[in-house]
Amino acid sequence: MKIKLQTGFCIVIALLMMLSLVSSVSAITVDGNKTSGEWNENWAFGQTNNATAASEYDINNLGDRLEIMQGTLQADTGDYNAVDPKNDSGSSYDESMALNGNSSGSDLYKVYGHYNQSTDTLYGMTEVYGIPGDHDGNGDVTTESSAGDSGGDVGPAGFGLSTQESWSIAFYQAKNGVYQDYSLIQISDNDWNIIDTDVGLDYNNVSSKFSYQNFRQIGDDTLPKSVYEVKVENFSKFYDVNPGSKLAIQVGAGSSGDPEVGEDSGVVFFEIPNPQIDIEKSTNGVDADNVIGPEIPIGDDVNWTYNVTNTGNTNLTNISVTDSEGVSVTCPTNTLAPGESMICTANGTAQEGQYSNIGNVTANFSDIIVTDEDPSHYFGVNASIDIEKSTNGDDADTPTGPEIGVGDPVTWNYTVTNTGNVNLSSVEVSDNQTAFTSSIGELAVGESTTVTNTSTAMEGQYANLGNVTGQYSNNITIDVTDEDPSHYFGVNASIDIEKSTNGDDADTPTGPEIGVGDPVTWNYTVTNTGNVNLSSVEVSDNQTAFTSSIGELAVGESTTVTNTSTAMEGQYANLGNVTGQYSNNITIDVTDEDPSHYFGVNASIDIEKSTNGDDADTPTGPEIGVR
Image (cartoon, rainbow, N blue to C red; front, side, top):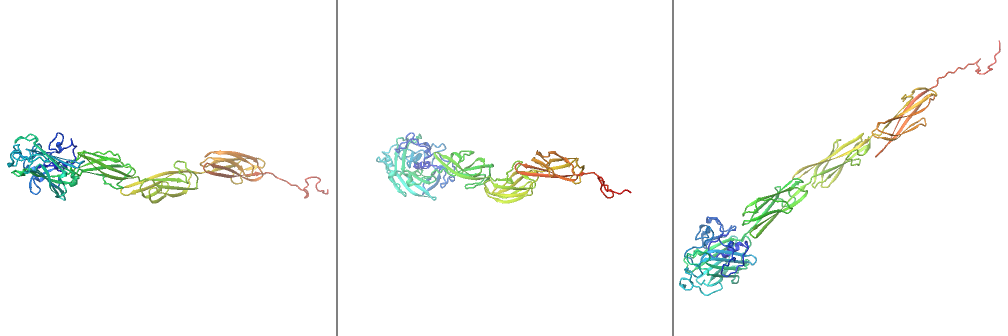
């Protein structure tokens, strides 16, 4: 807001614009005296802007300065402070605002203003050259009434300002670019009166005092001459003093005989300070005020920017940007001029799920604290999938896995679960050892489905991998995959028996020839021809009572047992039989047999003699006549 002053009884203006911006010193007493410590020098006109031409002033866009116009609203002279129409406060801000020289009691030196927000009271004070009622500046108001010097009777405002001299203060409120809501206070005849008002301002809300104890002679430029003080109570009852509201105060001072009254009239334009700040927070470049915000894979970088703008009409200091989630925010400066912006930054790592944080900014305009906040969001995407493969119901991640008889059925189940927090598509299962594939398609968060593959068991240790792939595709695309091994052991439990007869592997007849009654030796050679150890191995023969218990037989191990007898006559055949068992997680009985043969040779001859046809093995034999 602009703050510039020129002439007149502008005490009120400065106070309004300051709006409690500076801590008060001692309490203000309206008694016509400038007591030490009563008025803060920061409340005085003198802190003007740097304008050098009237065109640089815009009374409808005031900023943080007061603006002075020489003349009145009704008779705009076009002379602003920048063209120095009389004698403003000067480059060092400590000179008079009115013409130095033939001073009258109406020549202004310095104007102060202060608004006490807690009591809703507007205070004003001005220091002037001369004393009230002393138009010719000789320091005497009692002897020269013909020239307008007349002290009059002591009144509520003091003594020395007669009916021929007056101070007038007119208030206007800017509404829609038009100044209206007029009130006029006139201080004359040592009292004040409400001459006119549109807002109901009355005598009891105003109080004024003036004095001339500090009178100085003409040409004496030392500090204060005379003091005028005024206050308006309940000011916000009549005028809007909210930040950003605009007012004009028109001040007139002089006397009926003052030939240069124009130097003592002016209009002060001012705006109540409107400190404001705005913060706009973005996440990875997205102004994500609402959920869900940008999608960011968990573990990826998150970059937050905080665009802070001074949207008010005052300079801001002590700017601090914080984050509701404790994120450390870095800013390039802690001050901003009106309309100026800066970018603050912070970074982090994406967490899973919906994330929300709020950027907060605070700043100071003197004792006024302004703040703003802006939320931002992102969704931490955990696109993940799990496959669990089982073999015949066994989650056989490590060997050996279940034992399955060679040639027996094998069933693989592939259970696929969406373990993330987003739905997946294009889900497909495959196996690295078979041509098996299965398309699942869509899989919602937390959903599981099982597909099945079958085969027959192969011998030995078997391993294969179940693999699953899928994809999340929305604002970002993430491919997901997982695999799970499974195993089984193809059990080949088998045994072999080889039977020999007298060393001859006589699988087919006739086999070896053995004299009847001669010794016969049968050897039974038993071998574990499988891939698992066997137990309860026992040999028997189908033609004899022979049995032999071998017991354990390791993989590839052989052992021989023997059976003996004597040869029987003729073709002989018998079967050697072996039985055994594999028993671990599964039980398999095994057996084998092998035939063997021999021919029992009976080498013998017979002669039968008869005598005259009679088998006369014993005497007397047949009787035969002698011839």
